[in-house]
Length: 416
Image (cartoon, rainbow, N blue to C red; front, side, top):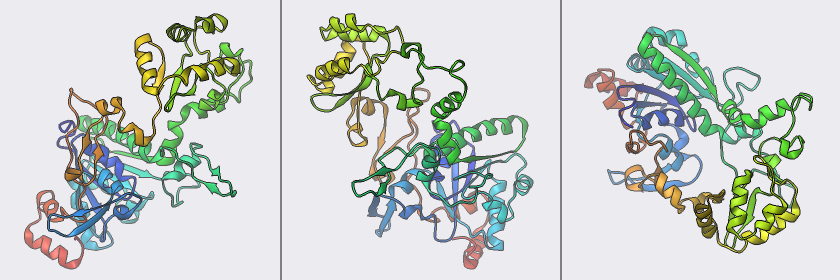
């Protein structure tokens, strides 16, 4: 996919998780220049695991997996935006880039004199995107925050209480820190299309908290719908119109759509359509179950039918998970594997769909973005940069500075 954004240059002013935004653009072939403060983005030391290896010059180095993944393929330039010389360098970079990403608290660039109006003076067709925690407006605008905050605010993660009464963060997927950058990248691509055809600049802002909430639109919109009278909004006909809890909460009492333990793990059974339920019963030689509980044509989970659930529990326990997946293929019915992040790595479907790039290239084994374009996997990016690794190269090739000017800027500390 390297050719899709060939010729697009992105100035990435982000720290920590928002670095994923420009990372998505790297995957499609954009040139991304990561502007870092003196000392660099401290994402290199954040979270676990920390990967230790040897640099080309023989020195030891340590980087977080988060940095190695989010910032792969980027070029690093150190610019001190608190200095007059540094702001002049930044202005020249803006003039040479198609996109400017602000991945910090809202207003970071404004405070340094780079308002949207100023950016447009430097680059009349520039696309500017701000990605922050809680967005540029609202009462939480200036709250410092990290990834779990966005999912907790959006209702996507709720505390668990241990045996001693302490609240604990449960093991859940982080949504906002990935959905926010993905939505922002989508917006940037749309703005780039307009900029290329009309020359018009664009300014947009995305909150990771908003993205976490929108990712859960189905539950949120269900709760809103349930504020209307039951005569206007009801449940499924197969449930006699009874309103179920929003989202997966309404699946808890499901029977024909439910998890079942196998001889060596679990599978997810999903025979909510009558045809799949019939095929299952025929396949296991239990047509009596279909005759007794045929169900509705669609959307019938046999909710709260514990008698049937007990029968299914015993049936599923008699085979391994792999045997049940083979059964689903043979009888064209709805049974899916159940994995953990650890077991998923060895799943054959995962192995078929995903491409690993080894530690020798990227510092840690990493997955490429799961998009196949023109029948090809994404181009493998370069390893995430060391702090200021490309300063001289970018200032020379992008800004047109000669060696004397670069040396002078280094001596003032404006670049590094």
